[in-house]
Amino acid sequence: MTQPATAPTPGRASREAPAAPDTRRRVGILALQGAVREHADAVRALGAEPVLVRLPADLEGLDALILPGGESTTMRRLIDRYGLREPILAMAAGGRPMLGTCAGMILMARRATDGEEPVLPLLDVTVQRNAYGRQLDSHEADLRIPAIGEEPLRGVFIRAPVLAQTGPEVEVLARDDEGRPIAVRQGRVLATAFHPELTDDRRLHRLLLEMIGT
Image (cartoon, rainbow, N blue to C red; front, side, top):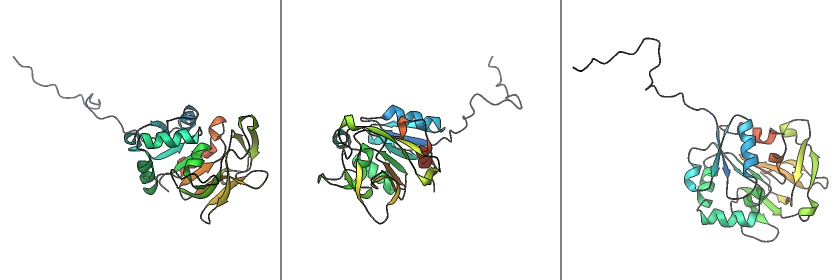
């Protein structure tokens, strides 16, 4: 004999009830090459969810995107191999904030002093590669970035670029000792010549998160 269905006990959540939605911000990190894990750690430390991006489908549902440091020529080739160029540009056109660090800044520049064609021309800047020399000339410096607070941020420079020129809509957030721009913002796009993910200072990543939905 079939037993009648048991009514749920009042006050007790059903096992079939949908889980509460995850309201954390989802921040993509281009994971083709470069300092991916360090950016993921920084995003996670701020309570957001890092999402590794290798294919166009990985961009769906993201609130922001980070283009990490690494080797810009390799990253350029892989972006095109996996069909990521147009989807990333569409994501930027849709107002999703982006952060490019070191090689990521090179990828975002509209122009380069060596004449190389742009990849993701989101910043009205001219970039100069390896402006501080080769790997052996890597260094650290305390940087003043008023947009994130009065306390200096420790910048880690590894074969870092600088910006030779910036357009009128580009806000310069920081300069090096010679007055060259090393951190900029244009609309919802941030870029740095240095690696903020290699320190415990999360203020630039927090600035990226604060730009979501603004």
